[in-house]
Image 1 (cartoon, rainbow, N blue to C red):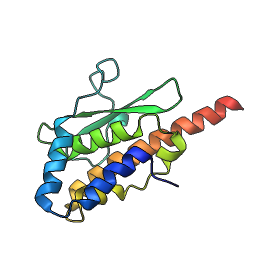
Image 2 (image 1 turned 180 degrees about the vertical axis):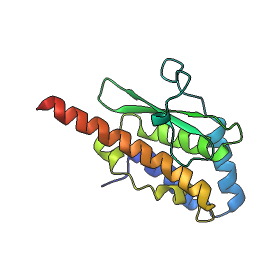
Image 3 (image 1 turned 135 degrees about the vertical axis):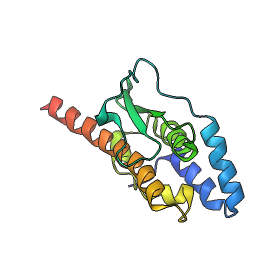
Image 4 (image 1 turned 135 degrees about the horizontal axis):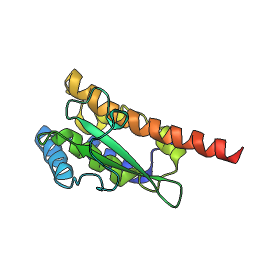
Length: 151
């Protein structure tokens, strides 16, 4: 399945960033745009089901169903030093809003390596891929629920 257009643009930007310093600057720029999930969605204490498994930055995902039946994926990153998690959260939230759930569910979690490169530590890679996998899982769950409602 095709990569959503806005996500594809971002991935192409990172693919073209061969210089590690430029890639790091791009990530820092994305992370600087991070804003935590809306207070009406992210009610403390956060539920364990909202937490990305294996993520060192303690990331939580709060899906907000939009009128067009797509999802605004909102994030809380509890680690203030979680630049990589914040950067990926911004990328996912901004590029997947208003994208059909079938496309979100079909994402390849390997997109993490396109953004961060292959030099990721095992722990960081697992956490970042966990963010993508949880977004995909939420999309699949919403699709399943919508199909059940049609029956």
